[in-house]
Length: 335
Image (tube, rainbow, N blue to C red; front, side, top):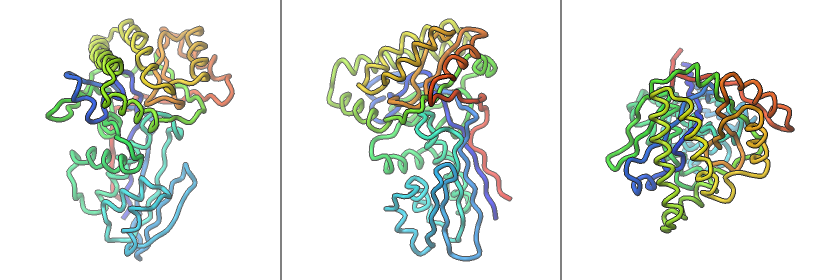
């Protein structure tokens, strides 16, 4: 049996970090907005005729072999830790080879590891006979990934990976509700450029620093989170009305609050790239994920995306990502 699954990564455009439990409980009407992109994570599982368990990551060029009787050891395995912990969670009873791959650059801040978690969960769940309903996948992914990164994980990435499209997540005491935003996908592709800075991001460190400061009751951080919440709701309204002037204004207004959440949200290198983009046709910038490196998304003036990409593409180690709006979320097929 062969099982193949894929899930998209995402670009977050408003409301990031407030999706970490329990931070959103302190901010009524908390929300975050993102959209899925075609840089997909994939997982291929092929059953074997013996008890071997072979785990491989193509983009990381790491692989190792164990056996069914040693699956318990995968709870403490540091090689391919996310995949190892997921295999340990599902406890398969047949030998198999799992090959994982992500099209998003490592440390991009595009939720690539979360997309990989959802893709692997989709494949492993099918391997064990569809033990869990799909509605359980996000909870499993968040809990297992939290054990890997050892700090609280945000939830927004998993929703983009599982459902695709453009999303507004409403974060409430009775749970998280995904609202699919009906948007013009072509306008996203024409107006948004995504730049990989070439610097590794500091997502776990940044998120943990923001989390601790918020929980400690810092009033300034609390007010910044209130404004981050407000920017997400404002972005939702702008996208639903297809008002790209308001999209740009919302991104511009939110940038200072985002930048000041933690000392390492942006680096001098990232600041220089933002300045150059704004001088060459960008209207606004959004650091992707927790920042500290990774990707920056730029909203470009109408017809200026190519100018922005040309200006930034000449910078050393910078890569402009080729992406498309991903309407489809998790896919699983069995052969």
